[in-house]
Image 1 (cartoon, rainbow, N blue to C red):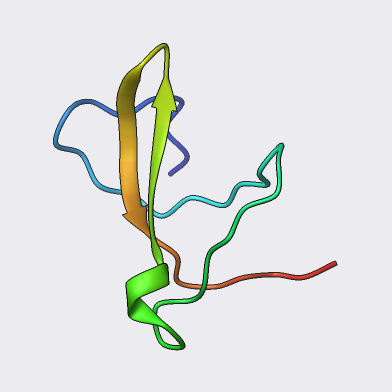
Image 2: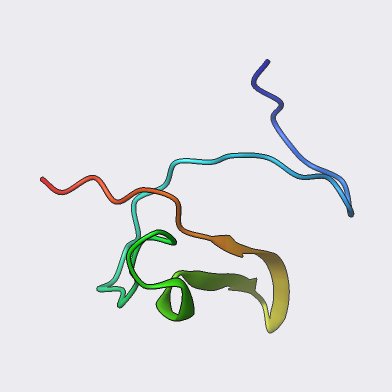
Length: 56
């Protein structure tokens, strides 16, 4: 299933491409640098860990 939105408390796996450079590592390589937060309008709208990095 591919939901178009998530509600508070929902969990999912996502794939995204950042619009600006991002310093992040995969969870299995460097756990301390694998965590991220996505903010919009001054509020945190998502948080998670990086499981895989796909390089161009």
